Image (cartoon, rainbow, N blue to C red):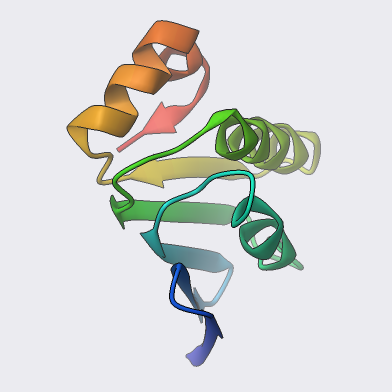
Length: 108
């Protein structure tokens, strides 16, 4: 089991954990126009067949974050894999519901 941590200033922390073909990306902080490129940089899925994005510590997600979710979802589907979004907070869930992303993404 390999563990990698990235610290991106004080606005966001991203931890990537890989176990076999499952990758978990845990995010702590807002996902917005400023931080989305940093999160996108961690989306290097390699041989992963299941990617779980843990957003338990994400209090806010802008349209830039939604774009990342959709891109990751499409990438994993195109490669025969699965993309899951875990531990969605109520404010972020509201955004996913309003935009229809709750119907597209696999929320766990």
